Length: 104
Image (tube, rainbow, N blue to C red; front, side):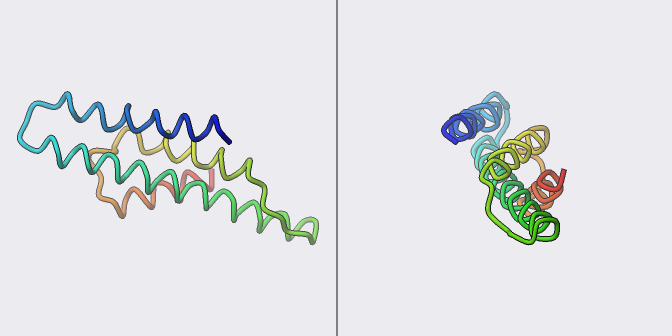
């Protein structure tokens, strides 16, 4: 779990830090949008992976339980999936990207 949180923290430096290299008028808004989209996509992907695994386990074994490995892996999938468009897409699209990434 600690490794996932360290990667998540570092991902802000990557996604938001890239916005600081942009030469234009809206650097602050791109910086903020990249941070918001990174957070939304990672959180949504983690929760989607966790609850989809919970659903599958309940159907196959009859005993549902939360497996945090799926939450952590889903979070990383969400971060990877939003990286290319974090400063461009709207926040609602970041949530949709995270939802799809969590299912993958």
